[in-house]
Amino acid sequence: GDSVTQMEGPVTLSEEAFLTINCTYTATGYPSLFWYVQYPGEGLQLLLKATKADDKGSNKGFEATYRKETTSFHLEKGSVQVSDSAVYFCALQTDSWGKLQFGAGTQVVVTP
Amino acid sequence: DGGITQSPKYLFRKEGQNVTLSCEQNLNHDAMYWYRQDPGQGLRLIYYSQIVNDFQKGDIAEGYSVSREKKESFPLTVTSAQKNPTAFYLCASSIIGGRSYNEQFFGPGTRLTVL
Image (cartoon, rainbow over all chains, first blue to last red; front, side):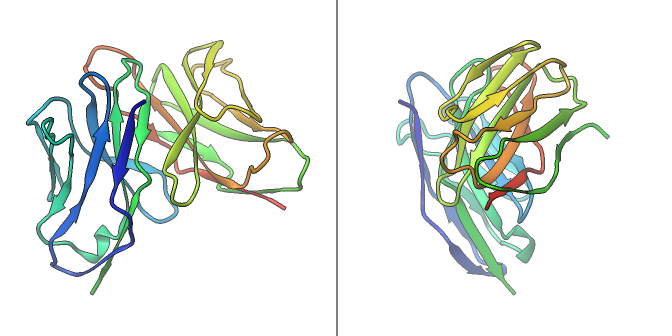
């Protein structure tokens, strides 16, 4: 079945450091890929998405490229801020009605 | 403002009691979903509904029940049959069709603790 694998956290960084969170997937067909972010005590918010191979999603300084050849969708940000401290979830969607398959989540902690 | 509301934010119940979690949306979305979140396990789908008066089991439906009497509302009941109900529960909604993907919008969640 479909699955998403993310790097384990927590990832601890200093402010202005470069962030990478690895995400790989297994899926039949051609899934859409997403990164969601969850701030402490809140629900999830869509951060960015890519719906086909080689698409690059971007938002709030975060980027991720849909790599079909390596079945990956790694999240990157060039200079993190304390406000980026959150849990980040990689997810895929193959069903037309919208079922999401989530990775386990990666906690990111940014220190001043 | 359009959005999804879940209430209450924190809920405590004694073991053996059924409890109902509320989820309301004013986004005019057709589809609604319930997820369970446990530490280190991501989100797992409990139930989903694409239309009023119809719903389907997700990956972990045992011990849960839902209803969809109105488009705006999708309450989740955690029954006494659920062996480990303490968790963070998230409700979501989305439109159906018209695009190659369906963005799901999430509520703020309800943290249920069974004592």
